[in-house]
Image (tube, rainbow, N blue to C red):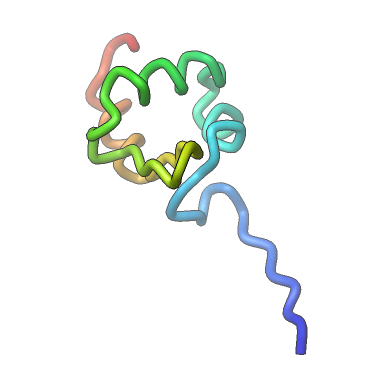
Length: 68
């Protein structure tokens, strides 16, 4: 049996760079650069060469910043 499940970006645990860019309003290149600068940050997951963003952790970090 096949289930078609659609999860909104706001409900996902991790986001791709493209999804995170749309969700946070930050450019894809900027997100890639931030992740490359701190690959061990608690909001970054490296899956091979694919970067995934932990949505809630990055939200908390951005809430505490005045600029990125």
